[in-house]
Length: 314
Length: 111
Image (cartoon, rainbow over all chains, first blue to last red; front, side, top):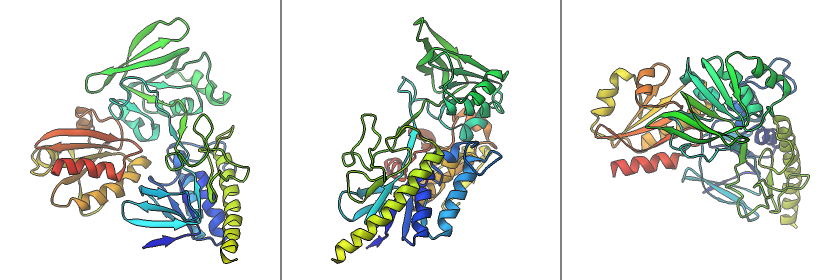
């Protein structure tokens, strides 16, 4: 027995939850699926300063919960910590098997699975994951109380999470591949001024070394080609994101970087299949652009489902 | 937390983990850790599935730093698997721990 919805949204980040708010308010029977708790990347962002409506900074996890509460208030159902064990998104009716048990289906699906932290692909990285290497400062910062840690990257995440980590670590060395930060000037300057933070410019990690736990990090200066090994208590990696496209691989048209191509209404090349948020091919990926995508996708889906129902009746 | 999962402290590690007759899954968790919240219902579900065959334990990392350091656990959540008093298999760590992955590891331990 399968349960039927008007719309199934995959991914409970800003894009997916905004789509759910709009769809549920339009009285569509809406289900949101997420393999984690709500919020997507926002849930592990310690503070958000550029989302309108919050003159003081808002904690990412609080913002995520507020999005979800709003969607649920209008009747959207959110299933958290659920694993999609089978899926079929090609046909007129799209279906998912959940946790090898339930089956749910809908005429329209919005895939808003976003992106996940990019791995460096450097030797030792997977071996030491959870043994000295981390991708989540809010989760693991407290493990490094009084320690000397390294942060890899120089964009907004790397710089802002480094500032957050100063409350735990004794010293933070940022290793960045260029000779300046890509982060917004305000946070970049704050990091440069922070006495706990030092920066090694023009350098990239080449290997993570240790016996059972991470002990050293080998870096190469990309200009001089000189390599050296640094003692470290831990490394946080913030080097961008890769889209989570497992559900639509081989089905939706993608750009050369693996992001999904859409029309202006968030539709893909597959009828009834929409995408929204960071998974989509676009120039800027922000919470504000994700909620915009989610809005547009939900409005387009309303029309699609209505036309589809008419077509069926006719 | 479900009836099939028990929280322990590092003082109980020998007794509950190393001297356990059944295979053990030990979950290091932290507060302020959304991936830990996300894992909890999956961990509970697998624990229920293997009730009586494997032991599912949780340990709060901040309160049990020495054990975490001794086992080299530096991230939450981290699942460590034990059989016959020794660690076995691969640790599962971070945001993307799937219910089917936990199940597969436990199956190989009880099988």
